Amino acid sequence: MDNLESRGRNYLERCKHPFWQNVFQLEMEYLVEHLKGCRDILSVGCGPAIIEGELAKHGFRVTGLDISREALSCAPDRIRTVVGRAEDMAFPHHSFDAVIYVASLQFVDDYRTALDKSAGVLRPGGRLIILLLNPASAFFREKKADPASYIASIKHPDLAAVQSKASELFLVHGEYYLRIDGDRVEAGGKEPDSALFILSGTKRAEL
Image 1 (cartoon, helix red, strand yellow):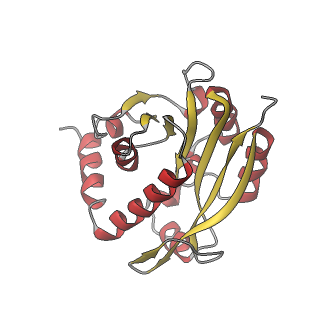
Image 2: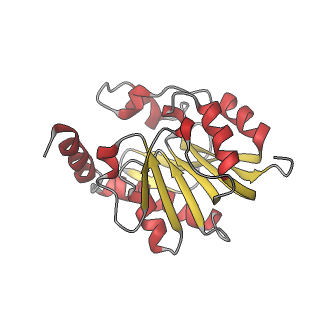
């Protein structure tokens, strides 16, 4: 097993911790509720596709896109995986009912191009759901200060800028979600105690 694959396996082991299992469960429940009526789902920046595998169990037909072949090698067999950059989605137009970003868009080099591509691969009236890390939360500040945390490599912490771009392409609204207090995780929450800011909406009719 090479070093990158080993790191991927180690990440999966860490994800088995009850804290992260609770986080993933609440994120998955949110997505299931807000993806009702959708069938074909594209998850951009899915990594090892832990949540995406659970979505597939709920009957969604999920495609996971990620730049890391090693991460995708850990993805469950029940989802389709594609290696590639978010800015270069090689899918035909109108391929999906929904595009989701599970805490991944802020790590994409060019999120504006990624959102343009997302609109293109969505069918008319297609749905967009973006789970964004909330920089105002104590959870974010704690993780950002840790050089070993993936959050330390965030590229786009400006939520307003991301929402502004998304609004050009989608009819979106935002809400705060996921209250984290130490090892305690709960749904709901409001700024600044929410770990996530979620943008959701539908593709504009004129696109």
